[in-house]
Image (cartoon, rainbow, N blue to C red; front, side, top):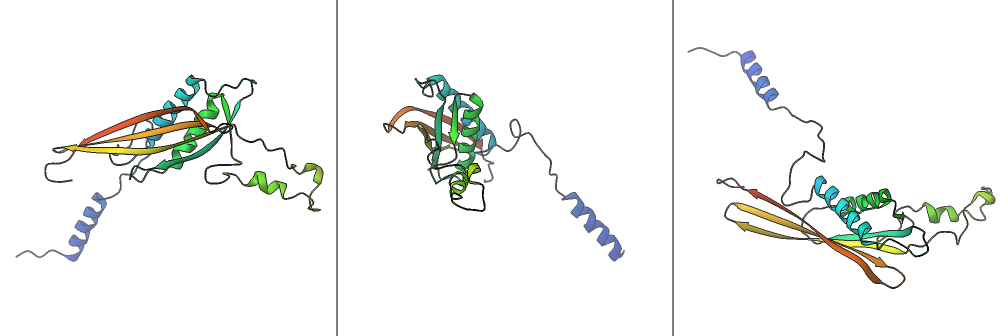
Amino acid sequence: MRTVSIFTVAALAAGILCGCGSSARRIDPSTQGVTTVRDVNTRDWNDVAARAVNSLVASGALVRQDGRKAIVMINEVKNRSGSRARTQILTNKLRQAMLASGKAVTTTAVGGRGPEDNATRQIRELENDDLFNQATVQKRGTVISPDLSLSGEIINQATRSGRTRENTFYFHVVLTDLKTGLAIWEDNFEITKQETVNIFGY
């Protein structure tokens, strides 16, 4: 019977381990990436944000009679879908798309979960602090309050037929006039994804 040296075994083991190495690489998330049926992915966020802002701009709800740009507070988007969706990704993309449209500006001084940037309030706490030149300190009563609030929610409906699974995510977005409390625009955006599971299991 032939014997196998310990060095041969070690070499074989090393070869196997090398063959199981990582194949990590960078991708373009706008055209590549894993399509997740149970969760929302990068392409979904990009798609919904673009569609929502396009619909909002086309509606004319951002147009003011005095000619100035509307000031929008980005409120909370609630995740009621049961997925692990991080809704802050959507609110950030909504803000960016709205600013890029040139039709509105957004405020970070207030938000659905408090200010996104505390600096507006913090800087005014420097009043009467003799360490600072008071002529350079921003004064109280100058921060502009938002006119509108953008909020929403995500829900989903999952179905299955045989080995085929289907999941539809419904993104509901609404714009509220903060003076009247009335919704002046709202829309729904659906994304449906489907997969066929292996006959031997999941």
